[in-house]
Amino acid sequence: MSRELFDFLADSPLFGDVEALATSPGAMQAELERYCAHAAEVFPAISESLISHKDRLNVFLETSPGVDPPFQLLKRAAIYHDGIILDDPLFRSLPDNNPSSIVTAKYLGYRAPSLSPISVIEAVNFMRALTPLVAVGIVHFVPLTGLRSINREIAFRFSPALFAEGIPPALLGWFHQKAKVHSLKRGKSGWYTRKGDPLELTRGILTLVSGLFAVCRP
Image (cartoon, rainbow, N blue to C red; front, side, top):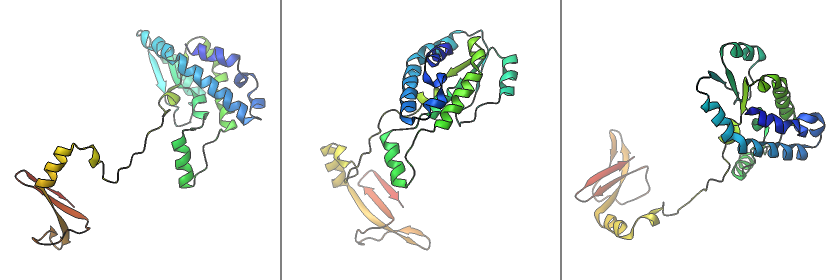
């Protein structure tokens, strides 16, 4: 089923003349996004084809950190296994344009994620070199990196009342009636509180709930 990916790439500028495409980062990123969308679409069929052949012995070679396995290792693996599964390196080349990642990078003083044409060229050359093994069904490229990345925003939520507004009013009122909070201070032998001490900002608190339990939070 990796042939579907290569059928797409055969008609794509990525395999046509990637060096020329690299002169226009915008066009390269657009074509890379088009390829990734296609790969995500055919991923269920790719995974199903690998799972359905239970009589085949496949091996997965880790490439996610960005280090592709050497060809000698691939040759040895092909001798002892029916198939070799590799993470699609083109997905690793696509920058993370998630708005949260961009804002975080800017806040921390890092450079915003950007496309590296050199990484794309290296990924294309690696996949081109393995075309014969893909054609005979030994090597299978699977877009694992892209599918496990975050493609949607994760909300940041803040509550000045520490989300007390989500507690039912009846339960919150009961807790206010039953609970008493005391400030804890650190002494030579540990944390302590004294009857009559005023409630003040401190590193620890003691919460007593009448008739139930005590909670100590240093």
